[in-house]
Image 1 (cartoon, helix red, strand yellow):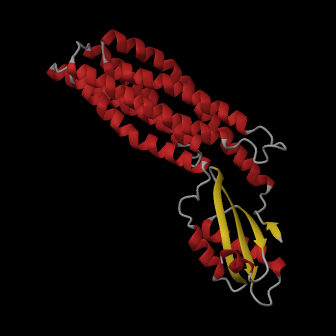
Image 2 (tube, helix red, strand yellow; image 1 turned 180 degrees about the horizontal axis):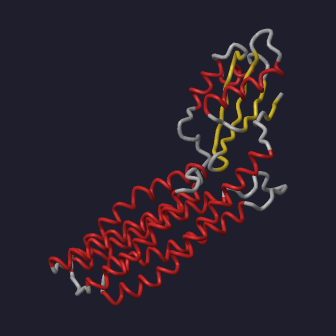
Image 3 (cartoon, rainbow, N blue to C red; image 1 turned 90 degrees about the vertical axis):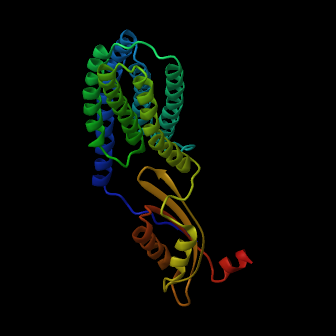
Length: 306
């Protein structure tokens, strides 16, 4: 006997979730326009000033524009209705977009580091004044974009991926400003590639976290903070449950965890009463939204493990 005991969601909950997603989409659209427009300005400014920090950050922003566009497409695709072959819908498209964002960011870090090494070995003349002006404008643009995304729903991995890109751009602008000021004060053009490497290093940790989290979701790994052995032991401690096993949990979307579990009733307990009891316990213990409970006869789980 099995029962899907996922907690019902009211129309109000659904409407709120839709509003949150649309709000995040509007924020990303705004940042995409800002990022794409400024990337061209920064690329031209970096070329004229001879600054690697600006050129690298311009390349970063061009990639970010593409990543933001991908994120916007992902939101649209995620709203496509379910069908007979895709019963979970297209929500994981957002996870794929987040993975692509993180992977692209890591590749860009490698490129920036490589170019910086070349510049350290062969320093080039840099026009610090124009470099400072362009970098300052970039900082303002990135601050506006970061604020727009930061005030959105942080549990949305797609939005988080876009935010990490913008933060990377913001750090790039800070590094370019620091390099420009340093070159103006000291004349050391090598500061430009050195600070580019430092900025690239700051981005790696966040990008890797985004990639690893996305891979965990796509591999249907048990969500962080949930251990199958502890869940099964906790279920066996319930007075209505004599046996529990075969617990599996995975992340469907950013805020939705799905699980299945097998349980057997204690002596004198109605098997039909177990699914809601197990579901309520899993919701309270691990915030699991949708649970399919398989109720087996007493002794069946023990026999399977023997």
